[in-house]
Image 1 (cartoon, rainbow, N blue to C red):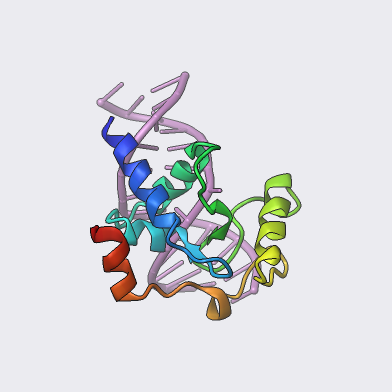
Image 2: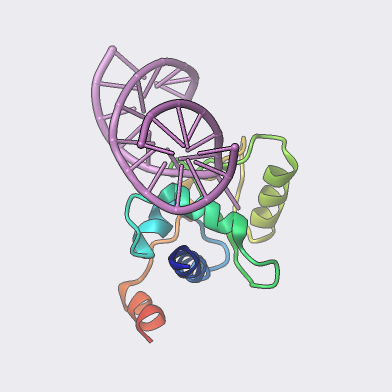
Length: 114
DNA sequence: CGACTGACGCCGA
DNA sequence: CTCGGCGCCAGTC
């Protein structure tokens, strides 16, 4: 019910992350108006409808690590998709310093308010 | 109810 | 950089 709404909120926020950039679970939670609910973000991504375009692979841990176990199929797919966009992945992690998405305030207002 | 479980995060040693 | 420990919260059993 209400949780459904939260997930939708999270999915929409994730869609704001542009190609070639990444964001952390906590960052998405904050932007979605759900501070402290990073874990919920991970769950929401897992429940994301296949049809809906949600760039789940652009979401990483706060330290830039891919959340899946290194070598797992999911981790490999995420790595592949990121590299296709030009995001360098070394040792199952990305350098947030270089690729983290820093949302532009004006754009956020534009895309979330309307 | 309580216990356990995560696609998490932060802090201190 | 690695570990341990604790906080967090929606679901599940």
